[in-house]
Image (tube, rainbow, N blue to C red; front, side, top):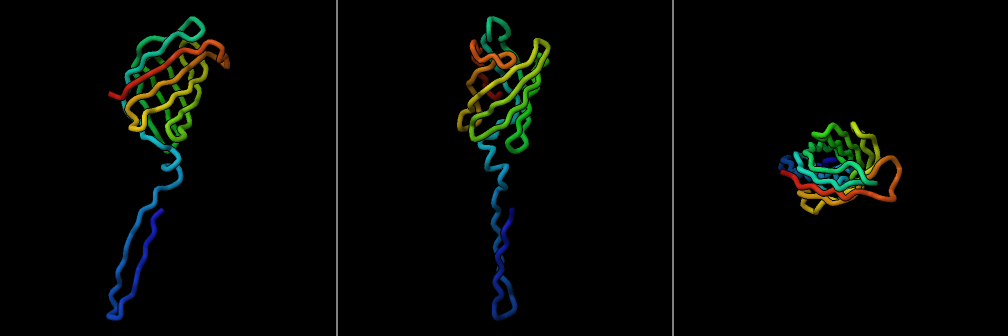
Amino acid sequence: MKTIHAVLLGSGLALASLSAVPDASAQQAGVFVAGHWETDAGNAAGRGGGHFSIDLSQNGSRVRWVASNGGEYLCSLEGSHCTGTWHGTSGSGWFDVWFSPDGGSFNGSWGYADDRSAPGSWSGRRT
């Protein structure tokens, strides 16, 4: 949203000022996380995990992750916390990650289906 203020001067000239206010979706999104990432995931419930690359695209608070291992991840970013779901060649499940304030790294956990009893660790850094 943009706000324009104008003042009419006695000579007929107008002074104007323009101030830009970020829209609500940009404010809610928190950190900017789009880009190429290298990640390491620990096993969840005794399976999965490993090192893989991932590309993130961001539209406001919505983040889409496309991984080199064939997975796709979708999440909603609130501040620095992103929680969502994934699906890939080995199944589907959930994930929760927290980005650093500068958006250059993340740490969190992931798992299969709705099982949160034995989550795997997950970390990454933007390259």
